[in-house]
Image (cartoon, rainbow, N blue to C red; front, side):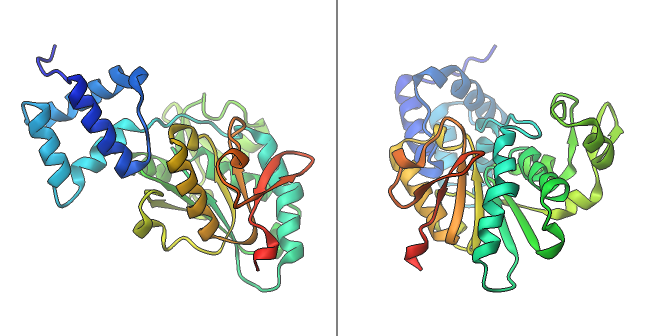
Length: 280
Protein backbone atom coordinates (compact mmCIF):
# COMPACT_ATOMS: atom_id res chain seq x y z
CA UNK A 1 0.00 0.00 0.00
CA UNK A 2 1.53 3.34 -1.04
CA UNK A 3 1.92 6.27 1.35
CA UNK A 4 1.74 8.73 -1.55
CA UNK A 5 -1.50 10.69 -1.73
CA UNK A 6 -2.92 12.97 -4.41
CA UNK A 7 -4.72 15.97 -2.93
CA UNK A 8 -7.62 17.84 -4.50
CA UNK A 9 -5.21 20.62 -5.46
CA UNK A 10 -2.76 18.11 -6.96
CA UNK A 11 -5.54 16.52 -9.00
CA UNK A 12 -6.70 19.93 -10.26
CA UNK A 13 -3.16 20.92 -11.29
CA UNK A 14 -2.55 17.64 -13.07
CA UNK A 15 -5.95 17.66 -14.78
CA UNK A 16 -5.32 21.13 -16.20
CA UNK A 17 -1.81 20.20 -17.37
CA UNK A 18 -2.91 16.95 -19.00
CA UNK A 19 -5.83 18.71 -20.68
CA UNK A 20 -3.56 21.37 -22.19
CA UNK A 21 -1.20 18.70 -23.50
CA UNK A 22 -3.72 16.21 -24.86
CA UNK A 23 -7.22 17.75 -24.96
CA UNK A 24 -8.44 14.94 -22.68
CA UNK A 25 -10.49 16.09 -19.71
CA UNK A 26 -10.68 14.00 -16.53
CA UNK A 27 -13.66 14.75 -14.30
CA UNK A 28 -14.00 13.83 -10.63
CA UNK A 29 -15.49 10.45 -11.48
CA UNK A 30 -12.05 9.47 -12.84
CA UNK A 31 -10.20 10.31 -9.60
CA UNK A 32 -9.43 6.71 -8.65
CA UNK A 33 -8.25 5.87 -12.18
CA UNK A 34 -6.01 8.97 -12.39
CA UNK A 35 -4.65 8.78 -8.83
CA UNK A 36 -3.68 5.12 -9.19
CA UNK A 37 -1.68 5.78 -12.35
CA UNK A 38 -0.07 8.94 -11.00
CA UNK A 39 1.10 7.10 -7.89
CA UNK A 40 2.45 4.31 -10.10
CA UNK A 41 4.61 6.78 -12.06
CA UNK A 42 5.68 8.71 -8.93
CA UNK A 43 6.98 5.47 -7.41
CA UNK A 44 8.54 4.29 -10.67
CA UNK A 45 10.53 7.56 -10.99
CA UNK A 46 11.54 7.69 -7.31
CA UNK A 47 9.98 11.14 -7.05
CA UNK A 48 8.62 10.57 -3.50
CA UNK A 49 5.84 13.20 -3.78
CA UNK A 50 3.39 14.48 -6.35
CA UNK A 51 5.06 17.89 -6.30
CA UNK A 52 8.48 16.46 -7.14
CA UNK A 53 7.03 14.30 -9.88
CA UNK A 54 4.98 17.15 -11.33
CA UNK A 55 8.07 19.35 -11.66
CA UNK A 56 9.81 16.55 -13.56
CA UNK A 57 6.76 16.02 -15.75
CA UNK A 58 6.46 19.70 -16.70
CA UNK A 59 10.10 20.50 -17.31
CA UNK A 60 11.65 17.32 -18.68
CA UNK A 61 12.95 18.39 -22.10
CA UNK A 62 12.72 14.97 -23.73
CA UNK A 63 9.03 14.51 -22.93
CA UNK A 64 9.66 10.82 -22.21
CA UNK A 65 7.86 10.81 -18.87
CA UNK A 66 4.83 12.59 -20.30
CA UNK A 67 4.63 9.94 -23.03
CA UNK A 68 4.81 7.13 -20.46
CA UNK A 69 2.03 8.76 -18.48
CA UNK A 70 -0.09 9.28 -21.60
CA UNK A 71 0.32 5.59 -22.39
CA UNK A 72 -1.02 4.74 -18.93
CA UNK A 73 -3.88 7.24 -18.94
CA UNK A 74 -5.42 6.50 -22.34
CA UNK A 75 -8.06 3.78 -22.57
CA UNK A 76 -7.73 1.36 -25.48
CA UNK A 77 -10.53 -1.15 -25.92
CA UNK A 78 -11.98 -2.17 -29.26
CA UNK A 79 -12.57 -5.17 -31.51
CA UNK A 80 -12.75 -6.10 -35.21
CA UNK A 81 -15.74 -4.92 -37.26
CA UNK A 82 -16.97 -2.67 -34.44
CA UNK A 83 -19.90 -0.54 -35.71
CA UNK A 84 -19.71 -2.48 -38.96
CA UNK A 85 -22.41 -0.38 -40.62
CA UNK A 86 -19.80 2.35 -41.16
CA UNK A 87 -17.49 -0.02 -43.02
CA UNK A 88 -20.46 -0.97 -45.20
CA UNK A 89 -21.04 2.74 -45.76
CA UNK A 90 -17.38 3.15 -46.70
CA UNK A 91 -17.46 0.57 -49.50
CA UNK A 92 -21.05 1.11 -50.70
CA UNK A 93 -21.40 4.91 -50.51
CA UNK A 94 -18.36 6.90 -49.40
CA UNK A 95 -15.74 5.47 -51.75
CA UNK A 96 -18.05 5.53 -54.79
CA UNK A 97 -18.72 9.23 -54.07
CA UNK A 98 -14.99 9.91 -53.78
CA UNK A 99 -14.02 8.02 -56.93
CA UNK A 100 -16.84 9.64 -58.91
CA UNK A 101 -15.43 13.08 -58.10
CA UNK A 102 -11.80 12.06 -58.52
CA UNK A 103 -9.85 14.00 -61.17
CA UNK A 104 -6.30 12.65 -60.69
CA UNK A 105 -4.34 9.46 -60.06
CA UNK A 106 -3.40 10.23 -56.46
CA UNK A 107 -4.01 7.45 -53.90
CA UNK A 108 -7.16 7.40 -51.79
CA UNK A 109 -6.01 8.22 -48.26
CA UNK A 110 -7.87 6.92 -45.19
CA UNK A 111 -6.87 8.09 -41.70
CA UNK A 112 -7.93 6.10 -38.64
CA UNK A 113 -7.45 7.98 -35.36
CA UNK A 114 -7.02 6.79 -32.67
CA UNK A 115 -5.54 3.52 -33.85
CA UNK A 116 -5.89 1.85 -30.45
CA UNK A 117 -4.51 -1.68 -30.82
CA UNK A 118 -5.18 -1.75 -34.56
CA UNK A 119 -8.56 -3.42 -34.90
CA UNK A 120 -10.13 -0.46 -36.70
CA UNK A 121 -7.51 0.15 -39.43
CA UNK A 122 -7.10 -3.57 -40.05
CA UNK A 123 -10.90 -3.88 -40.26
CA UNK A 124 -10.88 -1.14 -42.89
CA UNK A 125 -8.21 -2.97 -44.89
CA UNK A 126 -10.11 -6.28 -44.70
CA UNK A 127 -13.37 -4.63 -45.69
CA UNK A 128 -11.79 -3.02 -48.74
CA UNK A 129 -10.24 -6.30 -49.85
CA UNK A 130 -13.39 -8.32 -49.29
CA UNK A 131 -16.22 -5.98 -50.24
CA UNK A 132 -15.07 -3.03 -52.37
CA UNK A 133 -15.46 -4.05 -55.98
CA UNK A 134 -13.09 -1.30 -57.24
CA UNK A 135 -10.17 -2.17 -54.97
CA UNK A 136 -8.10 -3.30 -57.97
CA UNK A 137 -8.57 0.04 -59.73
CA UNK A 138 -7.22 2.41 -57.07
CA UNK A 139 -4.22 2.79 -54.83
CA UNK A 140 -5.28 3.12 -51.18
CA UNK A 141 -3.18 4.35 -48.28
CA UNK A 142 -4.34 3.59 -44.73
CA UNK A 143 -2.71 5.67 -42.00
CA UNK A 144 -3.56 4.99 -38.37
CA UNK A 145 -2.44 7.21 -35.50
CA UNK A 146 -2.52 7.27 -31.72
CA UNK A 147 -1.02 9.31 -28.90
CA UNK A 148 -0.03 6.10 -27.09
CA UNK A 149 3.31 4.69 -28.31
CA UNK A 150 2.83 1.40 -26.46
CA UNK A 151 -0.51 0.69 -28.10
CA UNK A 152 0.95 1.55 -31.54
CA UNK A 153 3.66 -1.05 -31.01
CA UNK A 154 0.98 -3.56 -30.06
CA UNK A 155 -1.01 -2.69 -33.20
CA UNK A 156 2.04 -3.20 -35.41
CA UNK A 157 2.52 -6.68 -33.99
CA UNK A 158 -1.08 -7.53 -34.90
CA UNK A 159 -1.69 -10.28 -32.34
CA UNK A 160 -5.23 -10.44 -30.93
CA UNK A 161 -7.25 -12.24 -28.30
CA UNK A 162 -10.23 -14.45 -29.25
CA UNK A 163 -12.50 -11.69 -27.89
CA UNK A 164 -11.09 -9.12 -30.35
CA UNK A 165 -11.92 -11.29 -33.36
CA UNK A 166 -15.22 -12.78 -32.14
CA UNK A 167 -17.34 -10.77 -34.62
CA UNK A 168 -15.36 -11.87 -37.68
CA UNK A 169 -16.88 -14.45 -40.05
CA UNK A 170 -14.99 -17.74 -40.00
CA UNK A 171 -13.93 -17.36 -43.63
CA UNK A 172 -12.26 -14.02 -42.88
CA UNK A 173 -10.62 -15.30 -39.72
CA UNK A 174 -9.19 -18.23 -41.66
CA UNK A 175 -8.12 -16.08 -44.60
CA UNK A 176 -6.33 -13.26 -42.78
CA UNK A 177 -5.27 -14.70 -39.40
CA UNK A 178 -3.15 -17.52 -38.03
CA UNK A 179 -3.85 -19.07 -34.64
CA UNK A 180 -0.75 -18.45 -32.53
CA UNK A 181 0.09 -18.42 -28.81
CA UNK A 182 -3.54 -18.60 -27.71
CA UNK A 183 -4.60 -15.76 -29.98
CA UNK A 184 -4.79 -14.69 -33.61
CA UNK A 185 -1.92 -13.19 -35.60
CA UNK A 186 -2.98 -11.03 -38.52
CA UNK A 187 -1.18 -11.82 -41.78
CA UNK A 188 1.97 -9.99 -42.85
CA UNK A 189 0.35 -8.44 -45.94
CA UNK A 190 -2.25 -6.64 -43.81
CA UNK A 191 0.35 -5.51 -41.29
CA UNK A 192 2.27 -3.96 -44.16
CA UNK A 193 -0.89 -2.35 -45.54
CA UNK A 194 -1.35 0.01 -42.57
CA UNK A 195 1.10 2.79 -41.68
CA UNK A 196 1.03 3.41 -37.93
CA UNK A 197 2.12 6.81 -36.61
CA UNK A 198 2.24 8.54 -33.26
CA UNK A 199 0.41 11.88 -33.16
CA UNK A 200 -1.25 14.21 -30.68
CA UNK A 201 -4.05 15.88 -32.66
CA UNK A 202 -4.04 18.76 -30.16
CA UNK A 203 -0.49 19.68 -31.18
CA UNK A 204 -0.49 21.84 -34.36
CA UNK A 205 3.12 20.94 -35.17
CA UNK A 206 2.38 17.22 -35.12
CA UNK A 207 -0.69 17.31 -37.36
CA UNK A 208 0.76 19.60 -40.01
CA UNK A 209 2.01 16.69 -42.13
CA UNK A 210 -1.42 15.02 -42.35
CA UNK A 211 -2.89 16.36 -45.58
CA UNK A 212 -4.93 15.26 -48.61
CA UNK A 213 -6.99 12.80 -46.57
CA UNK A 214 -10.15 11.45 -48.25
CA UNK A 215 -11.75 9.65 -45.29
CA UNK A 216 -11.22 10.03 -41.54
CA UNK A 217 -12.45 7.50 -39.00
CA UNK A 218 -12.44 9.15 -35.57
CA UNK A 219 -14.76 7.05 -33.46
CA UNK A 220 -15.25 7.34 -29.71
CA UNK A 221 -12.33 9.74 -29.16
CA UNK A 222 -14.12 13.08 -28.97
CA UNK A 223 -16.27 11.87 -26.07
CA UNK A 224 -13.15 12.30 -23.92
CA UNK A 225 -12.74 15.96 -25.02
CA UNK A 226 -14.51 19.09 -23.90
CA UNK A 227 -16.24 21.47 -26.35
CA UNK A 228 -13.12 23.54 -27.02
CA UNK A 229 -10.96 20.50 -27.76
CA UNK A 230 -13.68 19.00 -29.95
CA UNK A 231 -13.81 22.15 -32.06
CA UNK A 232 -10.04 22.15 -32.34
CA UNK A 233 -10.11 18.51 -33.47
CA UNK A 234 -12.75 19.36 -36.08
CA UNK A 235 -10.51 22.12 -37.43
CA UNK A 236 -7.56 19.71 -37.57
CA UNK A 237 -9.63 17.24 -39.58
CA UNK A 238 -10.96 19.97 -41.88
CA UNK A 239 -7.43 21.17 -42.69
CA UNK A 240 -6.17 17.61 -43.22
CA UNK A 241 -8.92 16.64 -45.65
CA UNK A 242 -9.42 17.01 -49.35
CA UNK A 243 -12.47 18.94 -50.43
CA UNK A 244 -15.39 16.53 -50.54
CA UNK A 245 -13.77 14.16 -48.03
CA UNK A 246 -15.74 12.42 -45.28
CA UNK A 247 -15.50 12.02 -41.49
CA UNK A 248 -17.00 9.04 -39.64
CA UNK A 249 -17.62 9.53 -35.91
CA UNK A 250 -18.82 7.14 -33.21
CA UNK A 251 -22.54 6.38 -32.97
CA UNK A 252 -22.98 8.68 -29.94
CA UNK A 253 -21.04 11.57 -31.46
CA UNK A 254 -22.33 14.35 -33.72
CA UNK A 255 -20.21 16.78 -35.72
CA UNK A 256 -23.23 19.06 -35.99
CA UNK A 257 -22.99 19.71 -32.24
CA UNK A 258 -19.26 20.40 -32.51
CA UNK A 259 -18.63 22.50 -35.60
CA UNK A 260 -20.35 24.05 -38.63
CA UNK A 261 -17.36 23.32 -40.88
CA UNK A 262 -18.82 20.05 -42.17
CA UNK A 263 -22.15 19.27 -43.75
CA UNK A 264 -24.24 16.27 -42.80
CA UNK A 265 -24.35 13.54 -45.43
CA UNK A 266 -27.03 10.88 -44.97
CA UNK A 267 -26.17 7.67 -46.76
CA UNK A 268 -28.35 4.53 -46.60
CA UNK A 269 -25.93 2.84 -44.21
CA UNK A 270 -24.88 5.74 -41.95
CA UNK A 271 -24.78 9.46 -41.26
CA UNK A 272 -21.33 10.90 -41.96
CA UNK A 273 -19.86 14.40 -42.33
CA UNK A 274 -18.41 15.94 -45.48
CA UNK A 275 -15.98 18.78 -46.13
CA UNK A 276 -18.13 20.93 -48.44
CA UNK A 277 -17.34 20.73 -52.13
CA UNK A 278 -18.17 24.41 -52.62
CA UNK A 279 -15.01 25.30 -50.69
CA UNK A 280 -12.98 24.17 -53.68
